Length: 241
Image (cartoon, helix red, strand yellow):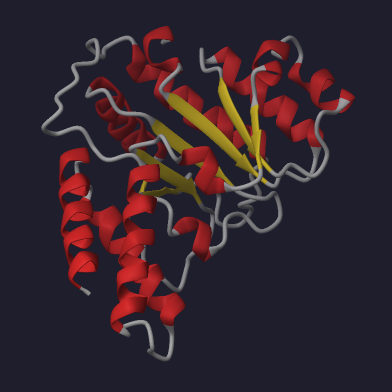
């Protein structure tokens, strides 16, 4: 598992209870994972988090605390979001086992993966899910679907552990290397500027246009080379405006 541990990041978003952060760190370490990111936690650092980590203090100590999801996932090439409820917008949904296979394949190809876990009460909102390529839903008892945050982390970490020993070493292929989320964000920002310059964003719902463009780009899974090409096209357009 150590071969993949540094390429798989668990991202906890606005966690309310510090004990859940510690328990999540413990769940990760038991399965050989150590890359934890915390987005705007409500109470951290915390003695309660350390106590609940039960020896996984090193995972807590190395946790990266940020104020935005985009900063946390900017180097990732594949992003999953966990969800427990249906959404008005439709996203591709996979099981933890299916997700683990996709994660392992991406890491084996030289990529980096982020798995997002939302707030204890409300999960991830639609704008946050728009940063995810696919959603993960853990099958639970429909009559009692309350799953603790750390338990959800444990399920995903376990599924990844099952696959880790069978994976071959990463082989970087520059032609098929997926673009990072940071590179995709930079392209979307430049596209936004072009749309404003040409007057296209003078529509009733510019936020909705941006939302669907992001989702389109995520579905396309562009390579790093393709994103650079698209950047070049936009630079050429802006030069002639």
